[in-house]
Image 1 (tube, rainbow, N blue to C red):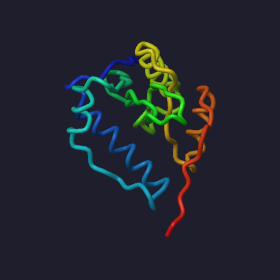
Image 2: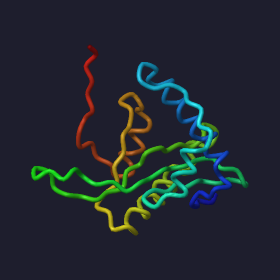
Image 3: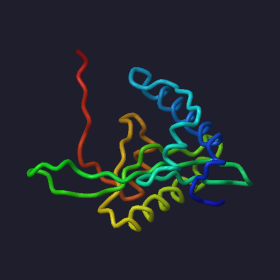
Length: 153
């Protein structure tokens, strides 16, 4: 298993991973998420950018997982303690490769990325009914600090 930064040559497999991720989320919360069709401009912009990266997990020459992490900062309000932090945007391991420690390796790469940039913490958003994912994040040291709530109108 190899964990490495994505390159332009990885765009097509990243698109396949993202499309699986979009479908997974659509299955979990169809009222808010839908399956998308990523064609490449999104991962290409990340790979070419300065404030974000994609790490991919490669098994036997094939990408089987990815994590997209970017730099973020708290809003500049007097009532908010200022922080620069790492934010996980997209994170998936293919269904056929889950529960093999690949997610932990990808998360470790994202955490090291944040440390190398002298960021204060790493943050992510997880769907409320993604119970298995929440258990994984708990095991990785994440703590709930807020809840995103909605009220249909």
